[in-house]
Image 1 (spheres, rainbow, N blue to C red):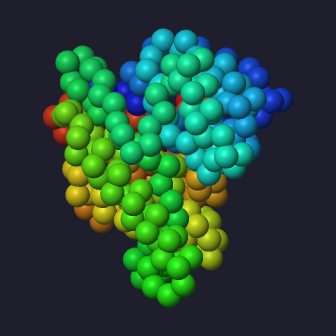
Image 2 (spheres, rainbow, N blue to C red; image 1 turned 90 degrees about the horizontal axis):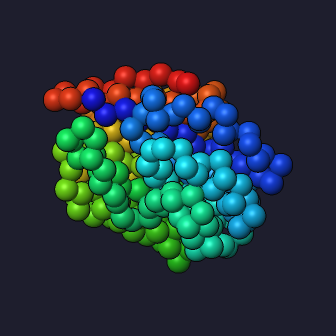
Length: 248
């Protein structure tokens, strides 16, 4: 059994040092890996990244992350990534993946930030102004990079980690008007096509936790305002890899 802990949208600022750490101290007893689904900082500054690094360093289990839109805000993505990796050993993914061994089973995690665009029937299209074409083409490019990363994983279990949502299911509770800014159907298509076992995202603070892709892959929104906890726990059962969620 593979035990995954996951959380996103912790939005740590310089006044948040030590906020999460007490709830994470016993995490290795409960999980085999911790996945962070973006928006780790408030404004994407190096100073905030150091707070994140302090909270998630030396937990005694692998920590894998993607960044979110807040983490991009200060145009310091490279520095933020270097701090998280260098000071905390957090593996930050963007169009790539990593493989971990848990009790003889290889679990692969592929990650991207993702992007917006909406869902089938209510989505943007690459037509008209160059700005609109560029917007949609970026979404497609990000989805393509996730597809490639998932397919490169040499693992029995594949998990897709992103910030933006791949399905509308987990957005229920958000205003319909902002669905196109919370995710894109192309991400969900990739999750199905690549044979992922589970997809994890954040971003939708007023959404709901549970969803599913058109192809039947379980999707979990782990934005902290949704799970209302330091992290959520999911168990991928051997052979069937059923997901069972709980919060902690």
